[in-house]
Image (cartoon, rainbow over all chains, first blue to last red; front, side):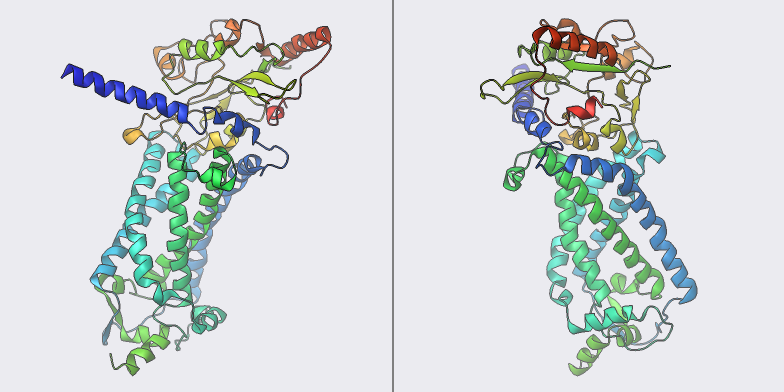
Length: 298
Length: 198
């Protein structure tokens, strides 16, 4: 038993030593990382990251956090929600599998976005253990998102490809600026939903990868070499990408919540029960409605 | 009143790459394996006449970039210019490492599942925000030699006195004297050093 324990401890210690020598940051690579800082003909990512992180990122996050909900609040007051009859025929839109996968993404996002914001505004929350746990939770919830993002990407991919309806939809902004209820050009998903889909899936995958880089920090998968930059510069580029993409994901996530919960009254039920209201489909997804009619599915 | 600003300076004409400073630092502060607050690096290795070694740790920069990017504001700069941080505030995000021109912040893998823990760096042997010379301060940050009126261990043991530390006025006075006596200056410190001595 003692011998086993000894071997176990020795293995751990050796792993640590191997780890220290293989370091992409503090070992022999440290010099490369140092020389990369703001050197002429370098990418100047160090000074750029310092400038963005110290002066811009938290202000932009604050602007989105306050601004986007405020705009929607005004929209709710001025234009108001679209209300459709919930008593009519129902159209089956989302299978149980899709709804469960979507639920995984819901749980992941509900954890990831607030914990991410906690890290951004850590200094106003005092830092320390709470924020450190927020950072760990931010990473753990990513596992759930990773599980959901791939099937979600695959089963909605075809429906999310751009069509001519999307251009028309964009010109009238989906009809959300008027109270009038009329047929809006859109298939099963409208241009807004498609935008969110691409940002959440492709953007989400980029977020997962960049987040993993920052989480692992000291690794060598040949990625930095592939770009011909130092490990630290890779991490700097990663941090900038993660933050900038977070602006877009966060803004569209808020939009997604507002649309499903408030802008179209009761629209959220479709992802819970799987059924959409006929009237809702008829007006907001007119092309899909006509297609279903033609196929005699309604 | 002009406060003293504490700075390190490593004279590359004198540094013999003995790595004594690295060992002294690790031993004095009982650093775990894999953490080296101070490291000797060799630049232009193999290029005749241009090769030189220098000792790098936290350079206690004026307008320290790490302090600017920290999302939890765990850094604080003492009146004498020593840049310190609060390990109980730090969340181990790694942003300071991205901001640092010297690769000074270190992250021990001590979290659950080997995740990176809170940051560790050179304190210029000045401890941290805990009570001076308390057991907790020693545990988290290592010795507080400055409070005892001693020179930071790395500079104290430097055999060639390449590594000097103190008020920047004094440091530059010593350095100027050395340059005058040997008749030539530095070979041109690598980019990023101007961040430290702004």
